[in-house]
Image (tube, rainbow, N blue to C red):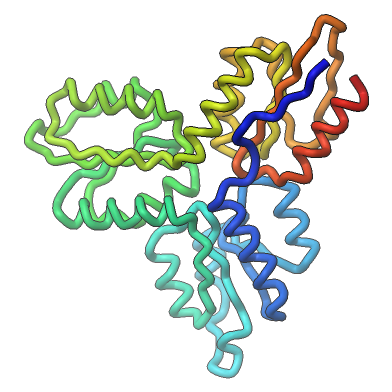
Length: 290
């Protein structure tokens, strides 16, 4: 039996950069917070907590924190996670006299700049993505006017504003590329005066494509990632369509496989927030035990 890892799997550039930033800041000796979990992976967040890193979960929690005195200024760092945050969070940190260490993924930063500029020019911003996802919430926080979040083609079909409305369409970086294209086509058929920025990260497209290619030839697929990870859930959806025996696990403890002898190829892929160590553990376990 062959065990094969998808060509593109695990930590993406933005996530690795954010996680490395936190570990570097730990060495500074300051009190370290992250605004929200630094990435959507419980194993990574748990390890950071053991090293003293605290998580600020909400804006309200940040607002309730005391303003640092001039003497204490520089003793506390708040790291902005890879997903990014609304503009107002930076303002609050500044007023609290807290050092802001910005680990927002550069690809997400690009979206902030686009919606800031286009909304300031009077355009209605359309964000294609999950309205409850922190990346989308962050993007919304950089819009200066009207904004709509759409997650499905059905919602795009129902969208209705005056035809002379100028719109700008962007996407959550981890959204499914084919779905994004389909939704853009819906808007074009509706006849809106729109501008489209394909802001899906190249690493996301490559990860989805390589997972799909592997799932087509695999008898069993294992998808590794956090349960709150949007990009990992999409990998699971893509693999499930190609391979009936697809499993979604967070850690090795979740893996309960009973493989028939007819299985020739087990494919493995992983979300952008999944550390290489965990991927290797799963690979080795499957190779040794089956």
